[in-house]
Image (tube, rainbow, N blue to C red):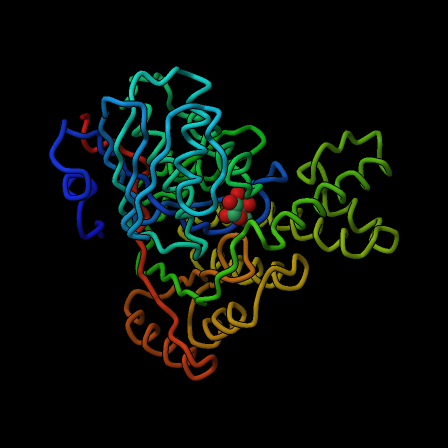
Length: 390
Ligand code: GLA
């Protein structure tokens, strides 16, 4: 699915005729499994979805950066002087954050005009933010003739989000938005910062995303708190076992955790147990995918959800309801996706039953919570791309 109006057309509509633009796009993502592992140097298994953010960019003669975002029907404009890059709140912060990062590479020779469109649901856990950051970084690098790509660009986007927007995220979302491959998930080792592509060409399986419609901005949620707890847990274990060289929860195994189950502060122990077992589930899921064993993948998804609910405590009644409905109505697997505290669930459902499944779960959710649950089927797609060279 493409955004209804292309960014290039929108640019002309909002700013008038002008030079041929650079157009870049980057997708949202679903994480198949591996939640809250990326900032613990662990494993994740995301894939890009066929929903994107698209930006059209062209130079302007003065030193202003002016942008229009279709999703908010809003303009924003700023003087391209580094000292003015201060967070404002809202979507302009993504543009400002990327511009600030780029200002470390160049003195901008001219200003720019930008139009932004997209169809990644906002704030739902499908990484609309990373798709915007990556599309902007790819497009702006092209507009200003910067040799900036690959991991360097991905890290730049993550820095913009954590250091400027203020969401202390891991690297998964920006990495997936940039490197994703069609019909593949990326088994990413966030310590080595290397990935292997794993085939998602599964016969008779549909990927359905069902939204709990609970929105909580991750910046204000327990995400930062969870991250802090994980660091605390790693520190606690490192002090107890100095000989093991524990730098993060990636260095902890199940035996070590079992040995301290009655000594470690309970909450830290639960957080650590989730991360350690989730890393093992990611590797098991990648192995199962390699054999086309979708039943095992599905079971791992349910186990991941239970762990996020009971050990990591980032689920909500709405997310639990959607996953439990899946378990009772023939989904091979289902779980919450992203940081939690709201957002979407992913359901692996036999292709031939997907229509009935969607109708059933929508109806059940409406009856239980009195509001609709938006649903989308997603297909694993390509990462960031320049569509128009300008
Ligand atoms: C958000 C963050 C990611 C990751 C997930 C949880 O999407 O941006 O880096 O930590 O939450 O797995």
